[in-house]
Length: 398
Image (cartoon, rainbow, N blue to C red):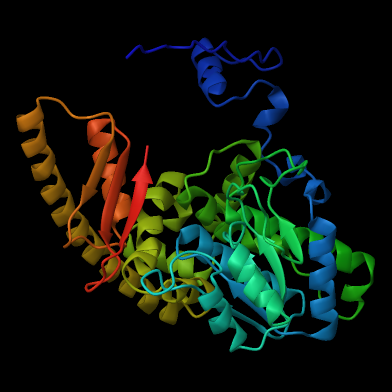
């Protein structure tokens, strides 16, 4: 196997007095112009560049004016949890009085807007379902919702398949023919953009004449959290969102849930950096979705009472310790199996496929990542779907 090393040209930044080392760093981050170093909100691309945005705003404006019931359908990771919290806080701040959420139990329903989750959401009698950080592949789920007369707004960032679901509106920078320049937004960034566009629409039609106009910048702490935790590429748009969100937390303006997670993780909000989210706060929030139910993590982010948020954060911390113990045991078992294979074969294959009936399906994704880091091979790790199942669920990393 041949290895090719491609040398990048150093970024040309003639207007800035930067060192050769800094030029190389900028080149590796695809920064080539001085304006790409501007991390103010004024540099954000316009929301109307999103395909489907106008249709989404029509749906949301109608739901607000008619005070229809809205149910958010979230994903069970940190991006999904922060997206859900941003959607609920933002819609309520703009006057929505009936907003609820559902998040799939990964062990019962799996990922996304499945027909089964539609039935769970339908029990809340919504007129509108909004997916956050999922939905772009949910053809059957959207069809099930439409059969029940429920409108569906998909907000997602994942790559679509050849066919798109028949949703009432879709906002996703990665859908075909979308002109929004950043294809690296996390799910939380997409729903934040939808809310900023909705506020502008409502402002233009006089919605805020008799009610306060919300400062959506108050949601940037959650946007930064989800963006970092989802490990999306930090292009200029994501750098701006993360920078502005971290500034809010450092200034003491973070929500109670994030402050509580900082406390249990022994991180100082006044000096919080992205790596604190990636390696301390994010894993604690993700532990809820991996081992139990992410609705607990979402409620922590929605909580405004510091004492209650602290109690929830300590429970998330406990779950994270449990997750670490499970992960450590699974990793030890997997490495022993790989050592045995290496001794017998003399070399590892180009890809690895691992399974053990004792493994926890909520942790196989982390296991695959750990094995990939050690072996430098693509890895697929499987676990039983349940204790009595004959089907497997797996995660792949490459």
